[in-house]
Amino acid sequence: MTNSETLPTAQMPPARIADNKAAEKQKAAFGSHPTRYAHVVGWGMALPQKLLTNSDLARMVDTTDEWIVSRTGIRQRYVADEKESTATLATQAASNALEMAGIAPSEVDLIIVATATPEHLFPATACLVQDALGCENAGAFDLLAACTGFIYGITLGSQMIRSGANKTVLVIGAETLSRIVNWEDRATCVLFGDGAGAFVLQASDQPGGVLTSFLRSDGSGGEALSVPAGGSKLKTSYDTLRDNLHAIQMNGREVFRFATRVMASAVKTVVDEAGLTLDDIQLVVPHQANTRIIESAAEKLKIPENKFVVTLDKYGNTSSASIPIAICEAFTQGRIKPKDKLVLVGFGGGLTWGATLLEWGTATPKEQTRWNKTQRNARKFLSRLRSFSKRILRMLESAIWGRSAPSGEQPPRTK
Ligand code: ACO
Image 1 (tube, rainbow, N blue to C red):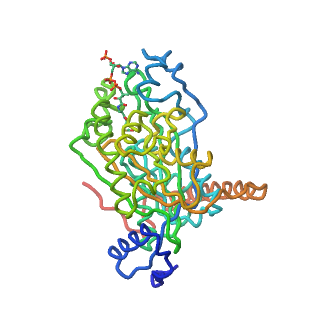
Image 2 (image 1 turned 120 degrees about the horizontal axis):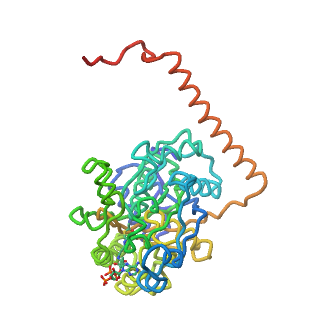
């Protein structure tokens, strides 16, 4: 669909108040641009191999399975080994999402990786995913909004589609929190897990997909949840290492109070903005931090708890990956049907919080035939080959040109 095409409003079913309201909002934002919708057409997740149960943790720090389950709801989590990292998990989740959608990596226009545990400060993890998948036509960047990252990512990705700038966007939430946890601090090490989840968003002229979003932040509460060192304020030093300032520092009670305060209002906001009521929502997918926080939101909203997806018993708090992982799980369990309205709601460091209301589409996982698998393996091989040849070319270029720039111009000399 090009920017000059506009869907006649008459084609929209009149009863769909949410779609009309969302369309009005879009018209106000983009003037005469066409009515494009950002649908979720693929989803996938990835977990590390290693399972760490509460009993395992009880052998490492002074804690018990009973304490962890009663205070948080967590029973186990997965942690990355030395061969696994945020980029490998993100790549696997994204590859699964593309595979189920039947979309080739070359069709992807943009990759957003929401993460608080990037592979490096730079290059961005999203660029490593781009290279590993062979998304040769994609822009790529990382986004840091801690556990609200996936909500921020899906909001940005869907707006890139709705504005007409992009057609296919990969939004990934990926974390290896085990790398930034102080494994001697029982107050935090029992909470977190590693994993990744990904959505493929694609443009469509059919109403649906991401309908409304709401994003907020409050930097005054940043100290409640932080990794103080390793940035420009506190560079890595012997002191920062000795004082464990590269690990997560958390005021659990403060985060708890903040989360219970903002979750219900964020859900209400996106539902109101879409012109719907809470009765129209089939499923709420909250950030998976603590069952008590989820129960409190359910109580405030007067939504039965069985409408909430809870997976933290199996995976712990996987930060920006927790919402897409929960959605993958809910879909596999048959809890999500076409046309269902889902509210995704998150909160986390920053402080940040937000919610997204989306209408699930009709996409179903493509059958994985032997032919599909062969194509997938061939694509993997080709993207590795392409990446390898580019590296060789760069080496040759350096060998041929030495220190001079190809144009013959030299960088300015310093005296
Ligand atoms: N095992 C046993 N005892 C423990 C443990 C543990 N793992 N951790 C703490 N305790 C002890 C404390 O030392 C304290 O003992 P004391 O009373 O003798 O001093 C006691 O348990 C109570 O500690 P609190 O911190 O007050 O316990 P609380 O009931 O608040 O539960 C928790 C702690 C689970 C962290 C809770 O505050 C919480 O869930 N907060 C929200 C945290 C959160 O969601 N973080 C992530 C959100 S953002 C993101 O996802 C990045």
